[in-house]
Image 1 (tube, rainbow, N blue to C red):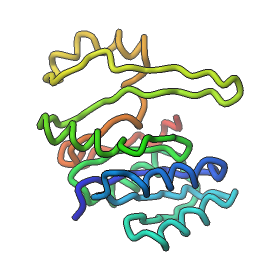
Image 2 (cartoon, rainbow, N blue to C red; image 1 turned 120 degrees about the vertical axis):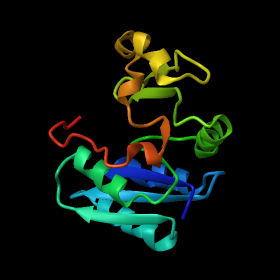
Image 3 (cartoon, rainbow, N blue to C red; image 1 turned 30 degrees about the vertical axis):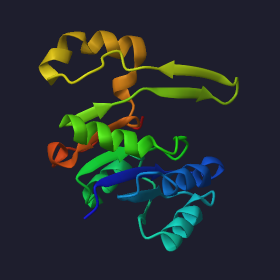
Length: 182
């Protein structure tokens, strides 16, 4: 069993996929499995997934017919064997120590769930937006609830799957709603 399961839903992201998978492969932290869920790609993304699975046993490719990102994430959750879970999208970009920082934060604090900030890029305008976590430290969920809606409205940070790590045990039998496509 590995420490961390990374779930990467993939649908027609050939333009970005090699870079994000290579950045995962070269992470400072390496006690992970990376579950690539090809959601019926038709642009060659499926072949890139297969190449990574063949050259690095930490990468596992699951092919399925196109049924949406929620179903792809659910497939990854069902196959995850790590103690912790994180999501990285096929068009994300991560630093070389991204996984180490997430794993260290959740292990050193004993938290069930850790959220980190992120940068959002708009390719068409080269705009960069920094989303910082507005709450820092270790808190019980009930302490965050009064501010949750306001924080989400201002930043949207809770709505992203990336930038988070959580204990697998808290997500047992909890899945994404397949009727929601975004």
